[in-house]
Image 1 (cartoon, rainbow, N blue to C red):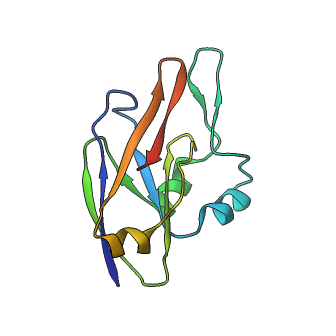
Image 2: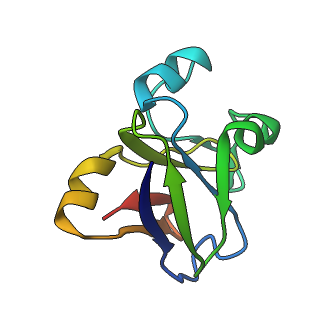
Length: 124
């Protein structure tokens, strides 16, 4: 087993929207299974995201993290990657967990966008 600290920076954009930390599959497999094209959601005429994932999928496979929250994850050794999804299916970049553990760094999730572009997660 391996442990890694994950922190979601406190940001105004998407402040009340939960994110899910996804570790059960790599991002390519996840996108293929749910037929997701690219990382981004489409934007509605009113400027909001158009959902492309069911929240039940996220709750089943992901770990919910809220704005400003830190979580200590204990993961099996065979899990090597991590990415983040919004409740609408906007996906972050994927990282190699082992590189973060080896360097002693914790994983930090930031939120980019807002106002003109949809807010979305980015792993720093």
